[in-house]
Figure 1 (spheres, rainbow, N blue to C red):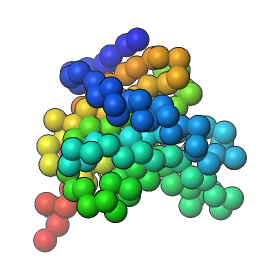
Figure 2: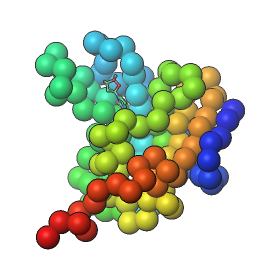
Figure 3: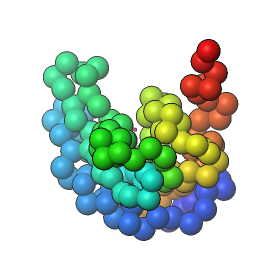
Figure 4: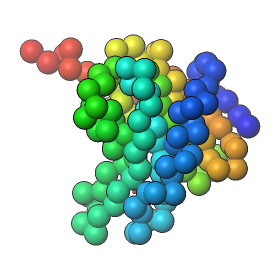
Length: 140
Ligand code: THU
């Protein structure tokens, strides 16, 4: 078990959901199954990566979890958990970090935890993962 940087205590329900959904990933090309869970407006939502033979159309687990939350009417991102088989556990890709930032009122208060089925764990705040990120407040 390891923890990096200043992220606080974990969200056990969120980590359990990311772990539970990971086997449902559709990843026939990369074989890299990812399960994600986001807590938004108090509720937990899961997502998995869905790949496509036209590779750029693949959608990451984190963004599918966000889509499920938005569909349910949730609007504010509070915490994220992501589960892959990588060791050490993989953090969200750059594109997903940008989308997570989109839904976060306070990126320094959003904990992002990466886990794997072996029980390894790393955690950061979203602000650590995407410092000085571009956001909609900069648009005219
Ligand atoms: N993937 C995710 O689901 N989330 C990430 O943050 C990184 C990458 C997926 C996309 C693709 O299906 C596979 O992992 C390999 O890149």
